[in-house]
Image 1 (cartoon, rainbow, N blue to C red):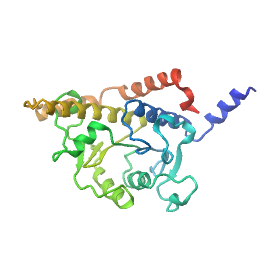
Image 2 (image 1 turned 180 degrees about the vertical axis):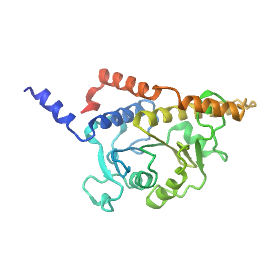
Image 3 (image 1 turned 90 degrees about the vertical axis):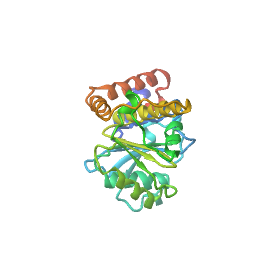
Image 4 (image 1 turned 90 degrees about the horizontal axis):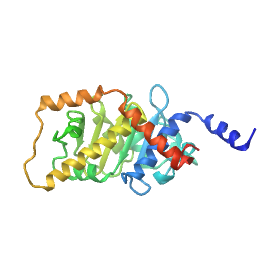
Length: 255
């Protein structure tokens, strides 16, 4: 057996290999979109039934360099997590650990300080109004946390997790901080994060004009949001296309 084939077999035998590949793709594409922030921010994916075990990026590694094999397997119920040799970032543990412990429907969690979502989070009213099709997707499906309490260590993470108990709410605008998105899979969550940033950009730039906004009626915004939720396969195809591009341009992400 060739060395290359042996290496491939070793990699594909990693626990949760396909999930790792999906996450590694999401990290790298987030960096390409300039939605990352230096070596901060974190994504996680639950891999057991109750969500208490999850994959997460290693401490302070740039999103553009993360590979499938780099991802940490974390137990949200292990109090010794931060004392281990491969300890995650303490704020990642505080925020993501609390959500995976307390919010079982949050299978995947993505937290970034992307520019336009963070501008939205800095406004006195951080609600995203339904002014176009993209922003309508989030009508009645996002919550604003207006009580920023400092870095997301364990106490702050526990507080934030309590804002996501409604399964309909998939996005938390973290006031004075950034945005956190949850979903069922990497594809579902990344697609939602992408569209929230696009929607926030449209809204912020519309405010720049100083002209009145054309806000959709509630019933039309809800209709558009429901139609998007029922739209077949878009998120999966989005991630599949991104992996196809990375397979051509930087296949090392799968290692």
